[in-house]
Amino acid sequence: MKAKEIRALARENLKQIPKKIYMSMGLLLVVANIIPSVVNQVTDSKSGVGVNIIFFLLEIAAVLLTANGYIFFDRWRNKIQKGGEEPNAWCGLTGQHIARLLIYGAIEALIIGTVAVAIAVAMVGAVIGSAIPQVLVAVIIIILLILLVWIELRLTYVVYVIDDDVRTGQKRSVWAEIGAGWKLTKGRVWKLLCLKLSFLGWYILTAFTLGILGIWLMPYYNLAIAETYEQSKEDKY
Image 1 (cartoon, rainbow, N blue to C red):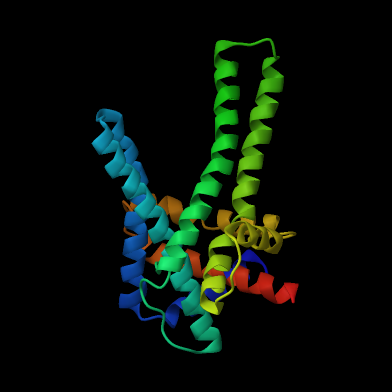
Image 2: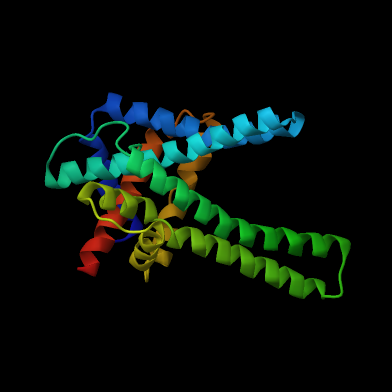
């Protein structure tokens, strides 16, 4: 399905969820997305081990809340299309979820962080000058940026795989779940990129409304991504 069709289906699914439910979760997701920015601004002006620990914990909470949002709306999509009970608002924050999500978050941060550091080093080299021609440095930076985006896209479904394993009682390592999510995005990277870019206009409008529009946008976006995950599983089998 094209991005336009997926978004249309996501909007139809959103209509099936009571407004007070999806808007409450949308507000929580907006707050979760704001936390890292606030933390970065505050930590720039304050220091100290205690302060850093507090803000580190806040960032972890933001990551877990975001993952919970993905899981929550995927379960709602599943309920709408296949029936079953309404998901609990904290369905993605059970003990099993948190343990796996924290391990996955650490692995993802290591992978993404390594590429990000490489980009930073290349950019510093470009600024202060080096033996490598500037054109080549620019090419390296562009390649690394593309690699960063590609890795992020290939990891899109990992949170859903973790939730599926928890629901079905499947015992797999987090590495195996990352591998499963990675395989599900094979041949879908371009479609995922197009879908995410199709929301760019909405995110710009959200910025103009100081995040208020995000209360509706985040559920809409999450349902769209969840729909692509379901389709990837159907295509696989």
